[in-house]
Image (cartoon, rainbow, N blue to C red):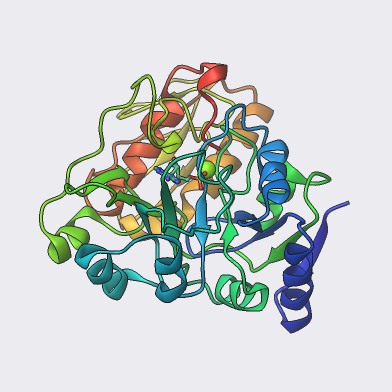
Length: 329
Ligand code: AMP
Ligand code: MG
């Protein structure tokens, strides 16, 4: 049984107790819902992989309540300090060299000598982390390869019966995952575009290395796997016209006519589109299947700002499905 906990003091306290007992609790962040377990507890972390059916052990993002706590886990330099001051709390994950006495489970770090840390801004995530008083490993709260959840109902769709509780904070305001930036090396490298734009990061630390192309054989970041974030129906990208057997994921003021369509933002606003993105993909997938449609056509979305994160997720969602590649989660 998965309990749904209310977003009040009692719900937060209960969620913190469950976490401290080594149980799995999904909770809202400003990006998507995370599946939390205490990051210093190997058994609890192992249960994350089991619940999500991640076929491989890939590193998890460790959530903490402030930058002081983050920099106890990972070694910070001037770049990390500047980025933390500019974007934490917020949707930026920093991959740092692990501190000498880093207490984070090696399983959560996939045996690496780095650690990915983030200070989420969502008030419920903040309250839960403060109440738990421990770092919390939290990948997105969906089964591996599925669309990321932006409501408690999405979490239950994928994980009901497999996790102990979900803290229901309503829809996630941002709607796409955090930006993952690797600072473990002299050149800062973008591992995953996300909620904080490249433009904003470069304004603070100067030019960064763009993401390496997908289909690398040993990706450093499972979010980089080619097939990921996938709905059940195939996707066709950059569609300007719609076939009769297609549903339409639209963007902007003049979508082509379609029997079934959801518009991410009729006014062409990328922030609004990001917030709707995963919920729209889920809803369209379910409705299209019910109506016997066989594909989702997606209109072009400008690849700037948050559109870069959306373009990245769409490219992966549209990639040929390879079961062994569905391992990011
Ligand atoms: P998710 O599982 O959806 O929360 O995504 C977590 C992202 O952070 C994935 O792309 C991971 O590969 C990345 N990540 C976490 N820890 C590390 C690390 N130590 N080094 C590189 N990437 C990491
Ligand atoms: Mg994920």
